[in-house]
Image (cartoon, rainbow, N blue to C red; front, side):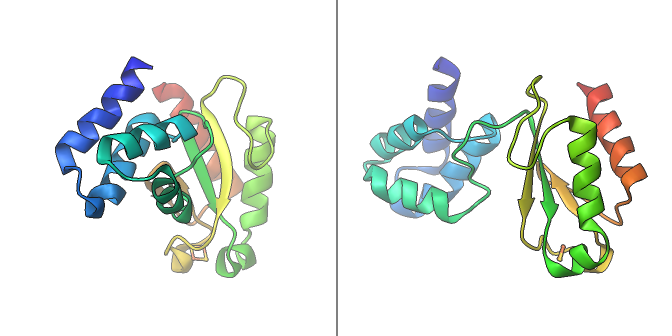
Length: 155
Ligand code: FES
């Protein structure tokens, strides 16, 4: 609780309370915590003298501002047509099998959440995915397993 409060306070102190700074504040808090809860939304609203409805509206407009509790690492597999044509479904199935979760779920150890996203701008090197903010391209099922393995070794 204290850590969350301080992440919000630090972000508001860093960017200022003006309405125009809401997006960087939301991004900073999201980066610190990996997700935003409704209580975070209320706290940010209170800190910045904004309505919770306004903060929620901005946060939910940008899907990377995830309002659900997620794992330590969030995997976003591109589901848009170019990646789909290059086998993104195999990538997704490989991840589901390796992590033993379905899309939208988090592993029981809290290490990974698996989600899908629209185009992330790497169409020419698809299939592509992001893990947190890091893009991974030209994916194959074998490459995906190696990437996941490396994340497990790092943690
Ligand atoms: S279609 Fe997948 S990155 Fe653009």
